[in-house]
Image: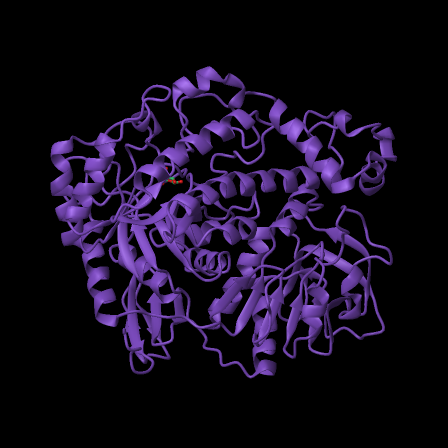
Length: 640
Ligand code: GAL
């Protein structure tokens, strides 16, 4: 795994560049990501390119022994461009334009903007496509950041109509699929259909689901347009996009298929603060991040583009964008770096080299302070670089456990939550955590992934079951867990004939006759766990494997397949993971709180995410806070 940083030469006097490059190299960095927001400097006026400064910046970095990851600048169209076509901005759900003055102020569906994106990417690729310093391309920056996947512009509405016509062929087919007879919502032509916003009360969930599918396809095709240019003009140079954390607004598996390396931006402390974690967890992991936040995304994104992945932005200190922004515990920046290596990353790049004293992110730490002195993280980078050097290349193998992740499932649950605490990401994350707490390595895979070779497969929920999925599950000879709401909707967002779990009945012979969601704080007892948030009434010839204290079925089991009819709390997940692992003959290891394990083919990594020392039984030793222990597993692979 190579280390790198995000650098903005355009933010600093040219006289500093050579020294910056020298210091990067000395710190152990080998890659520098540049350029992704530099459009106003690359093309100060329409059609007048200024490549000189970027030529010199790249040459300076290269001369110091660094390679660059060059970003296409399409996340930040310059003012002159927006003024030329003011309707290129995205329109929010309330109908308001998302104006100039920050970033991501474009609509994925605007043809004029798309042509401009093609133009600047072509010019950039023609200039640098064969530059010897070029290690990788990055398309755009964080598609969807700042809530920008959905746009309700005129351009989006018109593209949506075309998308619907291609999907349904006739408007009658659309009316039937959506059930538009309900509330007289029938359309006479595709031209009459609008985006599903500004309705009096909720719009039809089928309408919303198609709008989300359409918007996701627009992101994928916007990306693909750039990828095609880069492949043509910069043959052989890998292409990445930097995805975000806990973000499901578009189908990352689809975008991942078009690129070579899925990278993501890892801000464990910001994510802990911003997402659903309890206040107890927020306190316990204040300066470390929950022990599964980074790992979860590593395993998710490894499954997005055929195995090649990395961290494009690693938090090096306090960030500026969460409600509260604590500093990492000493040791955490190095620990995060090694956790990425343990999951098979090919790069970890810190955001950013030097903290900016101006503009929006002046409170965001870098490896250097604004005065160029070293920030706390700098020494940790050196330390991580030394460890990486010592352990050599780390290859990962297919994990024993597959966890099925579906972006469409996230949309379905979000469109029709039915109970406000039924959160898709939380359900998948909790399932993942239960596996990690037993020391298991996990591959997070797409619903169309090949499941052969896995020894346990978990499907936290999959309301719409894609073609071929049932057959792939049926072919497995290993324990399978299918979560609540699975098979509960057709592809057009209707209740399936014969009720849930629909097509999954061939594996889980039962019928869900009613569902109820429970208010936060309601916890109905069972032997060793509690039923919270969600419960399904099930009719089946199978006797339940587990019931609650009132005798209501919770888990149904037959032929290796388990169906879970409730929101599984942590205790239930732990119990199920334990049973499945026993049945599969998969070895587990109880991890004390804050301890996590992950194996590559040559090393067992043990990490302590706790703020206190923890005794680790499998090591027979105590690990200090924010520290790690590495055990060689076998002879190191021959680097040749
Ligand atoms: C990311 C983004 C970076 C920077 C960073 C700050 O979302 O890609 O450009 O804004 O956050 O943490």
